[in-house]
Image 1 (cartoon, one colour):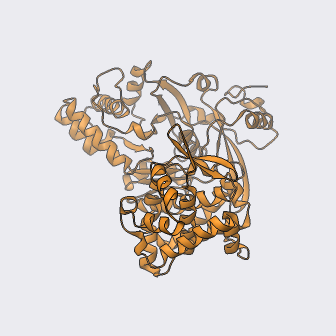
Image 2 (tube, one colour):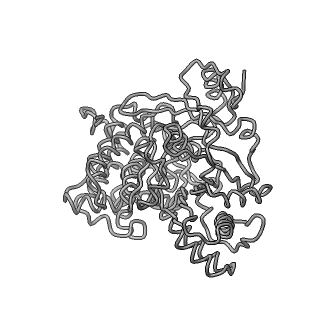
Image 3 (tube, helix red, strand yellow):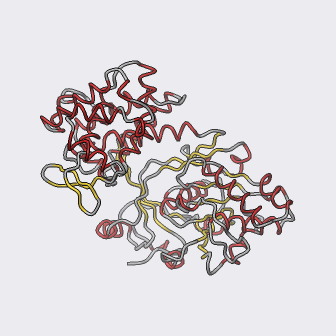
Length: 509
């Protein structure tokens, strides 16, 4: 079977629809410098740029900088930097299966071995944009000699690129770049800009460059959201290869949903013209609304559902969504309680649309998202994602939220450890143990060993260290949580869910 490459494109005879790139797309100028080779970048920014190129909108390609020694770059070279994105999922309750051969990447450079080539890209008049995803650890200030070849840190490398550009164009303010980090930390652009300026001072760059750095370049806060699991397992890889009719060592699977929210003004919109090709690339002066929606509706629902679903016998999100009662709980807690409780002014139509998109994502039969993985640092996630929503729900409606209460009770039950081994606490589900990876596991093990369920509920809710305030003071909340916890202990978790939702139709539209 043929391998994917520019030469083999005319020979491909797939069994399924595959969107192949036109030859003209292989010759577009290099307008983007990207730090990172990971699947999230290939599955979202690179795909979106490819989509815009196909529509004649952006007309630019990406030079990738590989900063780490690990991993194999040879696949990019063998395949002329082509890769297949297999988009799988549910959209508007309809299954979606799309295959796109993306051609937005022009070349991949090793920072360690080809640093001079990277700096040469920095001097190109075509270059306009820098994108990065170097993991959350990448955007940190470290003592770095920016004149090394290459500098150690990502901010150091980026500063060296900017300095080379400053020198090449004699400080021309029109030659500044739009920099869009996609690392999953709040205010990622603001933090990166502060680190760049601090490093510039520490490396004693001239004042003219520091002024150009601050005034001619734009670091944008951004938020990315798309599940891109990475390389498929061998069985799925083999099946996809047979369908596609060629071998692709860079084959990537992603869900249908996509969001790239970028903080920026009209200048940013003009430079990032690829946003015109997809309505899910959103450029606005403030993107807090999208961050809140993701945190409160997607992440918050995950946290309130994971213990309940897992203890009910479901291992994955998809399995739970296939059960009418669990699906009813998930949609009810999200749309009925978390949405009205969002502690931020959001557009109700946008919030509802986002909520229905989340439900589609949860139903995705191609993504195996395990509930047990979502329970990691359960207590911290509960505080960060749901406490402010709970408080605002009470403030707004002044009634006890029954679904949040049920989800919180399941959290307490999940944290009931029965054994400890190698400093890890374990709970029990249907005679089998499961690990409790939570910084509060020991605290809960002690409470469960000596308190009744009612005493435990009251004690935990009163713990201001965990929640920032005394949640037992919320009218009816402690009583509701205790009632559900007692029912789950006496009757079983799934049976307790059944009493709530046996005659309830899940929100699906």
